[in-house]
Length: 250
Ligand code: ADP
Ligand code: MG
Image (tube, rainbow, N blue to C red; front, side, top):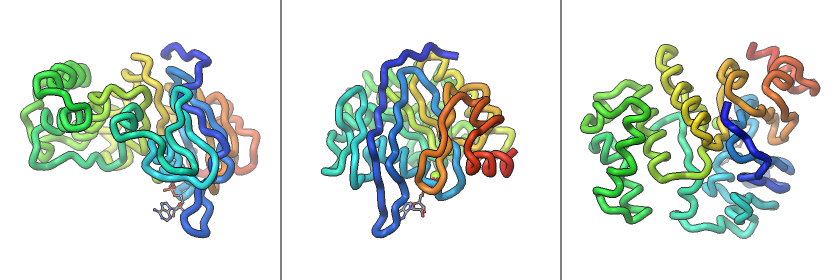
């Protein structure tokens, strides 16, 4: 496991989020430490995706604030940073949404060129070593349709990494994959954590959580119910709602 230090890289303070009259996150307070892998667990509709989008500045909030490295990213007055700054927080979704008409290399370098204003050569110099690292070097001139689901998801991960984020958020990155492809994506996440990347991962892969997470947080109906060491939260939760959930998915 990578070294985790006690510096807070993400700080979520008293966040409340509603869609219309429906409150989907309630008084969320949460820190993510430098180098840690925080796994978010919770039933469907508990607010996991919304929380990730708030961290990333894709959704506004009604109260509170989100700080990344002590800088306000998101607050009740709106997202506080530019698109370029927001690229410091990478996000990978269940659906990888690659551009079908573009090669792997073009998919991965597009934002680096457009958002970070790098030349094609500079963007390639950033992207190719990362593609090599995740075993996609041979596929750089392929189109998404020529890749497996696991390879496409790894391309999506590289596309985020090429922006040189300080934090990576993963929203059920293996849920759309056939079982035999899940591990190749999880292995990429494990590699990233070994390299010291700070990650927040929404997943139902409990074995991954137990092996890789530094902490596990359990969300239910918009509330952060419990957070702690993977073994404690998954095997010996204290709260009744966590127990019920774990019994259902074990
Ligand atoms: P999870 O990822 O844990 O399944 P979500 O964060 O996607 O949960 O959703 C939390 C709640 O917010 C759900 O009740 C969902 O219906 C609602 N919700 C999510 N996105 C929107 C939206 N854009 N507009 C209205 N309601 C939404
Ligand atoms: Mg979700």
